[in-house]
Length: 389
Ligand SMILES: NC(=O)c1ccc[n+]([C@@H]2O[C@H](COP(=O)([O-])OP(=O)(O)OC[C@H]3O[C@@H](n4cnc5c(N)ncnc54)[C@H](O)[C@@H]3O)[C@@H](O)[C@H]2O)c1
Image 1 (cartoon, protein in one colour):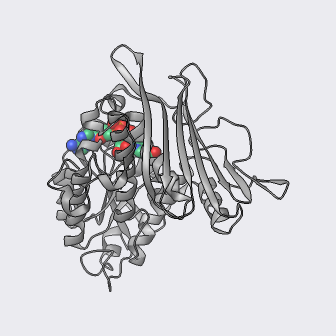
Image 2 (cartoon, protein in one colour):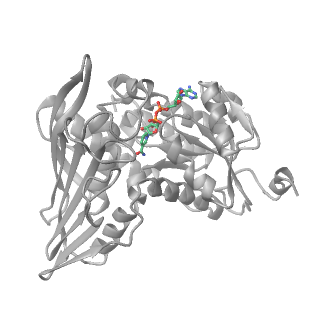
């Protein structure tokens, strides 16, 4: 039986809908740039998924990806890929200024969507998009891969099990290292990130920041209430600036005093060992009875166990974890396919993503205005479409 015959087992119009039996999930990937190297992993690994089509305005790049992934169809125009009835879901890996348009078009064409972080540049864009997903009843998954990284998952399980007692503080440190180490990053991949109009904010504190703000929320039982940010822009090449160093602090809601911080150190002369970006993130979760450290993420900066727990005078190291950053993408892709097959909500939901986006935007506003910003100052969902978002 060929692939097309197998697909006849699919019943109904949408994989996430109640009562639908879906045998395989056929993915169309739009945006075949740098991160597509990792985003493909879950779909290639899942026995009930296939990359059915790829799309990129750079058609030769799309052709190369299709050949590498065994994708049968190639498009240079998203509208044409969306007209392909042999696609159930679209994975969107395009620059941020295109996210709302691309995700809305995919939902309107009846496709489920996985959308890379940060989902949109503003809350207004985000709220328009989530309205469309609600109207269609299709799945809109925001993909934040740090939440799938096994050392982060392990730390979260330990925190939830009470390993550090009451979690009181989260501290994140990002070491941005020397350019030219790690992955090769094409100039066109950098160009849209260094333009705040197309990126939506700084390449460090907004683009990468979405992950760190999400981690600021991930381990704590309360939401973030207020934030303060110092962000310095460093010129590291003629007319190219990055938003670091930066120091961002926040307070969580609730009666227990809890604080968090994220520091970006622009150590641009330092070699950061990495198979991916030449930067690395470390996280410390300090509780009433113990401390947890996650010692690595995208890089391999510290040659230490990925997760270490201190409690009751003893230090325990967790060595047996899949630490390659690519694993977070593989697991995230698998979760999206499983969620569609099972008709459940995948991680990260729109409501959850909105909170992380609001946190990131509040930090950006704080840095711009030089004052502490309460997240309640940002527009709520109903008002966002008429405000600046
Ligand atoms: N989770 C992570 O850690 C992580 C890491 C890197 C990038 N990302 C996200 O992935 C997305 C892509 O980032 P990247 O680094 O791969 O960027 P990139 O510039 O390397 O790739 C983007 C691709 O989109 C294509 N494209 C642009 N406009 C298009 C259009 N209208 N139709 C079809 N294709 C179009 C470009 O030709 C390019 O190949 C962004 O949302 C980014 O934030 C996430």
